[in-house]
Image (cartoon, rainbow, N blue to C red; front, side):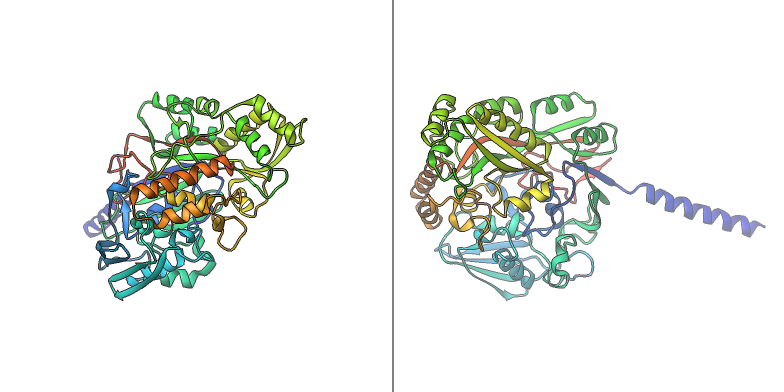
Length: 514
């Protein structure tokens, strides 16, 4: 009898210990304003909902310091150290040893780095191929040394090998084996691995216990897709969510700043919101019509609507604070002049403007303001509203007469100008990136600036390019929007959250939840 009692007691203790271990699992619940994931292949991931989670899965050769969007604070990541030649053309990166990929995909070596960067440079497998146009060669010197040779010096070379966009390193074996499935079955070296995907519902990540910086304090992240603002806010206030993607407006920030046990974090970089005008669609090939659109849009009104806590006025077609941003002479808001230009172009009674628009609430609300402003000068903007993922796909097929696009990029003017305003980045072409307007007016200056070694001359070329783009009305800068997130105070990022190059907080091995 005594033996049976002891056995029963021991069994009970084992069960209690197992229950205690399970209940102690640290789960971070994050809410995102989207209906579903776009894709998690880091060389294709461009949407707002994809970028934060990509930063949890992957590493670059260097990384933005967690919580920072500063170029000056780039630090070693998969590369322990590096050196460059005197002419700035040859860069040698020395990799960490013993870095493991998620699952059973083995150790990261120089072969994975070479494969990843070449993949990022290929327009068939990457949305960021244009960033790598100046790269002449990438080769493995040995298992832990990679040499990158440039055709010419480029601004901020470390930016294209950082843990951002094409700089993320993937498993060569996994990418080749999984093929098209890699978009939802990504394999990286980061602190968290994707373990479950529920369409239109959630992504679940588990801690990568073999992470080279140490096992994460968070055991699991559940990233939930909640497109409705009210539902997402309710889930956060009820405690169902620990972290939430906030609305980028003053009222939302002020409301949640008053909530007990809540921290609202408004961070850089800002996303520049721009209306790209498709110059290949008539009558928008007429500069008078494009100027009328520019003069109809009142950026001050848009900034006031968004609120000073989250929005600032634009100064150019490149965001404020980037290396090379030029304070351009923008078209003034002038309703009378806009009407006169339309009449002169043969449209005294106005004209229709057909656009495809995302249903993402913050962007749809902004576009409704633009719609009202354009109506004042006789332009009837007719919106076909689709879900965010479909919108991204459709605008890249060159189907819309104008595109409202909001973006942050690596903070150098060259990257923004190359991707949005160089002719080789025109959508629906073999080298497409995000040139929705078919802009080509500043190609010469953009190309010259990319290889200019004199900093003053380079900035002048960027300034000329920006003014040419503004004058030709390839796009109309409307406002800049800071990133807004909120968390309950029991969540500690493990760093000071001041910047979000990935449009969201980087969950690291140091992040914890009490």
